[in-house]
Image (cartoon, rainbow, N blue to C red; front, side, top):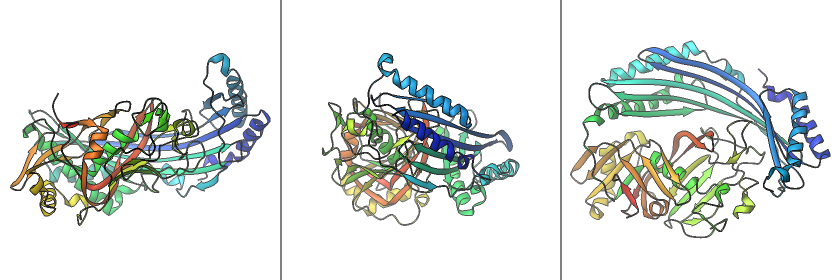
Length: 495
């Protein structure tokens, strides 16, 4: 089935021609999106939805530096031309409306197409067949772990964009995002704990892909066992400890504690900036630690082009402890004093693009080996890695924080608060299990305390990130495990 975005080239060219005749830069963003969702609980479908939407947004920047935009939820040509006229008029009243001036950016002209995903594969998803498969997966999970309630979910989305600019830019891309998820909750009279797990794929048939299903069941079983056992676990004492964190929590650290502060539209308030300019070239972490954001094809947060029609570039935010890049768009790069990296993203055609992350990760030099897959490592195996690396000669006890359950950061101060899924004390003699607790501290303290790492990079920690009312997919990770030395600014638990 042909995408509706294939039929708007003439309209895109006409909007560009009229914008040039008005002396404005125009950005014409068109979007076509299809989402299929299913949630199964207790062997029955709890909710099923199939939603498709399409529309466009028009943004202009006039010669005086005033910008305005508007949107419409269809792809008809005549209303688009009328909307362009109205948006141009609003921008022309920018001084009277008290709008802030921006410099008209000098952007490279781009043309490209990344539409390998066939739209009809998503729209033809058999919801009844998927539901039956989810019921089977839920039953398999209950056979492996009793005394838990489980919700099993499926989501298949194809998100297609075509972006025209009045300078001749025409880029078109389609992003497939599919997930299997579970939310396991303890049952009975004890305090209840819920633990989630998810796998993603670029294929809407991930529920029949054997390796993907096996990985899902491994993660789902781990989540269910945690949910079952957490009510009986003790509470860990508060304090600053030598920590081991897994790649999912490391992704949270990179994303929340550093990535948001590196988004260049925060140049006025970010702790990474001074007097409205990012502190490029300053040391912000340990010299063997780097933080990188880049779009990875086939990833949950992949985006080859920005919402402004620019190529999305690899951004080295921290290069061996030194602040290097920001996540920037045409409106923030020059003002923030960082190079343009094409990081603008928008949830929909109605939204104004903002600098946002894609796949963000923490890397260290010379990681210790960790053979096999990440799922091979329970707390006992993590303890063995630490013992083999001689960590217990340095610290009699390590505190292992497993999993990531959300968090937030104050980008003005660099202070973060995270939640993990479980805590384990690791010693030369064994492992002790605890309830999860708050992991909080200073961004700079956390980055300078990273001592070493284990294993290859693992970058499939996925989720959604909210900023100024917009939610977009996020992903990332690190090596299998990071080791953080005790730092007085980084704490576990407490008030």
